[in-house]
Image (cartoon, rainbow, N blue to C red; front, side):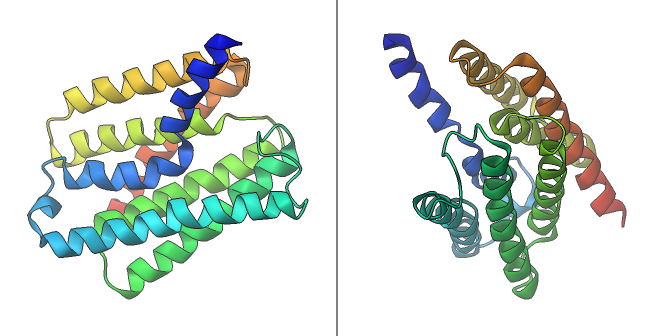
Length: 206
């Protein structure tokens, strides 16, 4: 019981909703040319990403739970997972529309395309297997780092090591807390990693 009280907040620190914000911050601090654009533009981009990818889903999902549309907030049922993912997907699509309208940098737009594709794959997978959201989310960050390293030739071994460590710790905690099983964890990592990498390479090839 005591270990659960200590470990559970750690999973909140690495919550899947934070991933678009973390991915955007990663791009801006990676050595990519975007780090040299005006600071006010960066703040605007991050504000929009934060509002649409974190605040909006975080407000709507509990509201749906209070209205009994979502059966549980622990995402133990297929219905809960699919509705929560669909809400998040809708917020990402809205964000993408705004980004295209205001001519955001192409790498941020492509990032959201990739995140949307990963969410669609994750939603589709829920009809056949329960995949862990944390694993898929951190898999996406790993995939993004690999893409930035290969495509732009950026030195990101340190960040990759840290991300692998965080994703490993998070996955281990989820297994210790018995909130998921290995068969729900490892495929989700692979979906996140390869979904992000393939999407980003494909969108840049178009």
